Image (tube, rainbow, N blue to C red):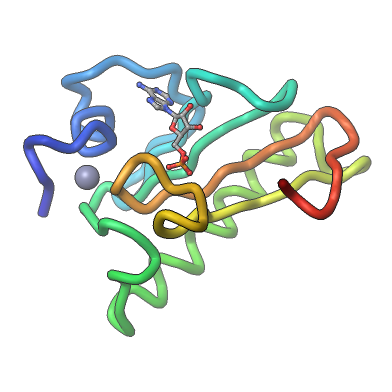
Length: 116
Ligand code: AMP
Ligand code: ZN
């Protein structure tokens, strides 16, 4: 299922260009257009799921794959040794601006904690 008005559905379908670093039958990953770190990649399910709040038990494998693909990309991007951060912003207070579930992979510099 995809949503024809959704930016990340369009990127997953290839109708809006993105700088892809990964694509498989369930997930795509691409460089964030406004990077917050030297490496800032978004990992996105092809299926339109509006947020983590909308995911259900049937998405358990997909959510696991989201993390494992993020780790694979972190390794490919040379982040494994020094570390990196994976983030899913959910809803207004979580800072979610694109209403299609996505995981941020951030690395290449020391990241502060706690987030603002
Ligand atoms: P969030 O605030 O967690 O919903 O994250 C949405 C992210 O999508 C932001 O980091 C944006 O910079 C990023 N973004 C928005 N439009 C695009 C685009 N066309 N290509 C790549 N990243 C995008
Ligand atoms: Zn979508």
